Image 1 (cartoon, rainbow, N blue to C red):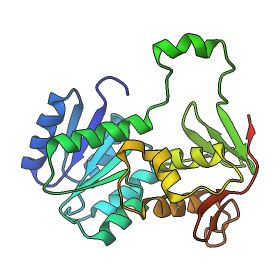
Image 2: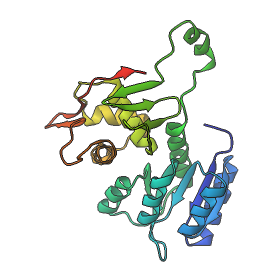
Image 3: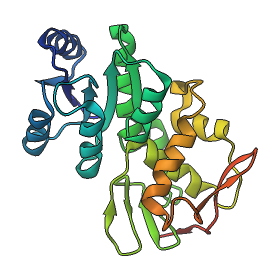
Length: 247
């Protein structure tokens, strides 16, 4: 995680944005307060944001629409922070690209922990100082994993399609696809995928993996309703079908 990550807090209630900003700043984050979608988009154009805390109940353009617009153009962390705790809203939030979903009222310490967890998942992996010397004596792990013409770059955490065009992934989507490329041709259970993408931050919300697989399919499959790359194995989980080579 880089020093002083930039967090944008989007809520139409200034009292809430000021409360969150003050608490986050006390934990070393740089914080911008915005109160509507247009202001967030303008901010992201001029001062890149590492993570957005997004309320759903906004006047005019709602939070789900803003989340969709974010995912079309930017790759940053997204945590929905809202009073809407319905399970359907949680599923929709994940489907539009949220990395986490927090309902009000919430504990500020827990929110900071979730922010740090999302930022860790987004940060490129760096070797620990003790392990660096040992790693230098071994071949470096492959930076590029290729399958069916697609190229996953673990160094830049980016994905390119067979035409060489960059495809925007959320942090959770990248982590999930990375796990698949490390285990091609193997059926991976939902529990395995959840553990290897979220680790200690995993929650018992059992539709998380299904939602993320659905989002991935929309981005990499020719027909998301008839997937050929990531297949479902009834009662067992999911499998990446094509072989993977190292670029």
